[in-house]
Length: 323
Image (cartoon, rainbow, N blue to C red; front, side, top):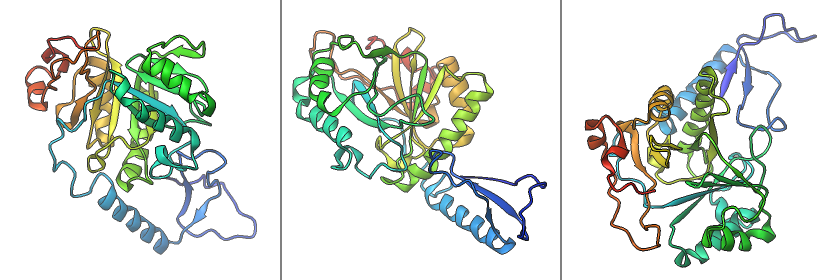
């Protein structure tokens, strides 16, 4: 939520402006949903609105009392593959978008993956991310990590075959409708209908990330996407970064309690230098099966304290070289 003071040269015929004049915008909405007209507040109204924003921030935002109260390291459940279905926008996602009868594609994909979870050696996590106007993606596009593959325009009728051929049988390049992904990807939980904390913090972080990426000239190299619930509402702002480690492996790292002030450090240190930010780190993607599909030794994620003591490079503590 942002406010701008319009140019003083603006005039309104037949209307006397009251001070201050604020332009009220929602930067994450599509152009058809934005409020483009100015909203006029008197001084008392402006103060009241500011009080409401402060109250919301203290209850749901970066100033809420629960911030930094919990230990973050180890709060990520084990998984080995992350599938993101691009579908509409956070403003219209219901609380349980993957289970919503009104949202057939997410419902079908979620149900089909769950029905086959005992048939695959790779533990797969499904999350919804934003698609549509102003994004790089269309409804039905599917992003798969760590394989760094994008499938274009998955349809309801193709869900069964997609899960069977691609996710179960590993034919990642068989469909002819895939692209190779390049760069680094940041997914920020902004699922307001699921939890107000993620909605309030997530939208601010998305805007800040895009702003800092633009300032660094990294547009087209780092991509930011609002996403649905990823677990741990109380840790908002929550985000996941998928980027190459020093050996070129794609690793997904989770961060919690992220504020706008942390964004430059995440971009410059984590993505730029491959250094984990220990105080915000929740865990990472890890494989629990080897290349032959056999159960591997449990992957012990390095704790935040261990990472701090080794230059904050988590892969230096991972001697097995899991993919």
